[in-house]
Image (cartoon, rainbow, N blue to C red):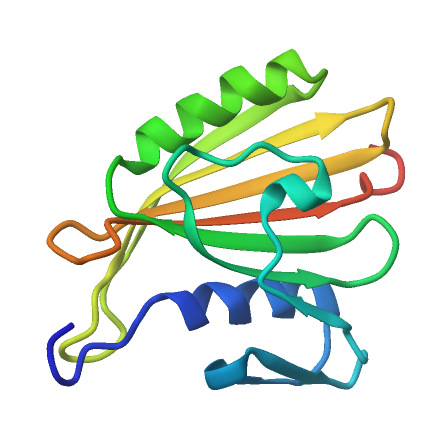
Length: 162
């Protein structure tokens, strides 16, 4: 990693924590501790399989947060592949497990500061009516970096009325 480059992982974890906690968050990346007004328990480095979810082959460097019954997130990095390949993999694997694919969007955000990568990738969502869960996936491409793809899975119960 070049001097001055910011790893995109903490941004993804902060995003997941903010979505799950709804409170003021402080993320300390060195040992993945999270403090929140919502008192979110952190489980560190659990894999998607620990939450009964598939993971793309070659997944590495896992981080996870569990925020009460049926809510949580898991992220990982890939040295090979693309956001399109990740979404294709999850569409196939989750479909086999009874998840209904509901949408996919292209995501693009310019760099927030000099010497930091911008975000480009895909966002996708599934629902599992029987298990009363909703799953969102964010997959971001970082060509030319050691970790080419960053993947974030966020799950929660479906919204009321949904």
